[in-house]
Length: 485
Image 1 (tube, rainbow, N blue to C red):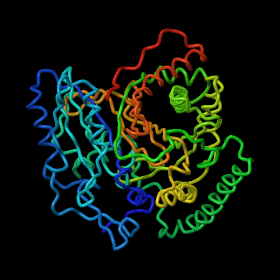
Image 2 (tube, rainbow, N blue to C red):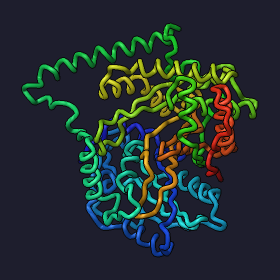
Image 3 (tube, one colour):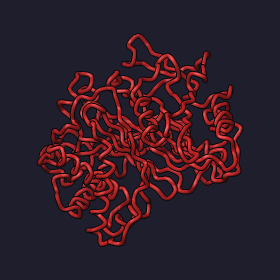
Image 4 (cartoon, rainbow, N blue to C red):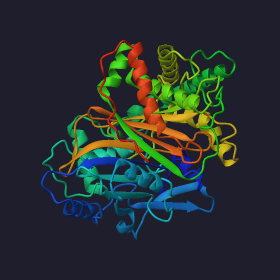
């Protein structure tokens, strides 16, 4: 049995019918010229169902002890893997708009994965207009995180429209070929990141590392404590001054999914003009949209919304780790009306959060995260997640391929992530940078945030507002319309 880390088991422990703990996403493709759609998709389906040695974790199922998800938990090979169950072919009803696609994805993203099987599904979806098709994949968060999912996506894609793969993207062969491609591009193997403790020449460094770990984490916890006594400066932490809105409620199991793309250069121009980072601009777009939404609903609180902003701790070349993430709490400054002031308040908050983790190793950040986020798991188990929300929402930015990519000749048009709402935060915003776009996927509780599609328009309005205060008054390239449901 391959043991599951405690940080991964967290997602199993907190899963209920109302809070499915899988992540996923929609990839949108255009068929190659001249191919027959039915034949092309049939061949892709056969490729996905290929009988082969599977990469982790797609050929493994859960193995639990007498305490269930409370541990110990591990992975074991599934000797009866049924690929016809995991790989499914669907057709959209006419007229095959994005609205119909996102309605289907909303339903698929609402259902729990079967814990008696490997924790993933792949849906091949036909029937879209303009000779397009889509895939929707979901996998349990205990098995994969956003960056890991992006590694899987990258492993099945090519920069050449002529290249064809004969290996399933879920195969060990495809994973090995992808590792070799990364090594050829100068990425080190994850196993080369740190010296092994048993190496005699590394013993002194290893012992020093243990001492430094305790010191670094203790220092971070002291700064965390200072925030609660009003001495934290711009640093934000979970639970402190998190206002109550209709986002911070108990969620149902039903989901709504919407998506949209914005030009990468348009957002980067705002960041540059306001002397910030791309992520600062993204957070400011989302903050402006959430502020508009709450104003429209008569629910804007006097205190600012706070967002959990995941950061990747994954070592370069690491394609195997299930989860390698830490968290920063970002102050979204939604109480500030002026968009420029709001942008700089967000910027200062993010700088303080990054400074809190600066100089810490991956293991130290993971330990700090467990100590500071652990109470959230306890609150969830006790049914108190919505009464004492740790933050208002989640906004996550995952880097994707920066060039146009193809899957066996089909041009990839967009990568739209679908993540997890939870008790206490009913809406989740995740985006992927791909080619010349930023592709947003928004998932919300269908009952708590029934008009989530309006956030798409509000994000556009917030971006225009930022362009105005940044002096970028030329007519912009608007978002490519993808919203639906």
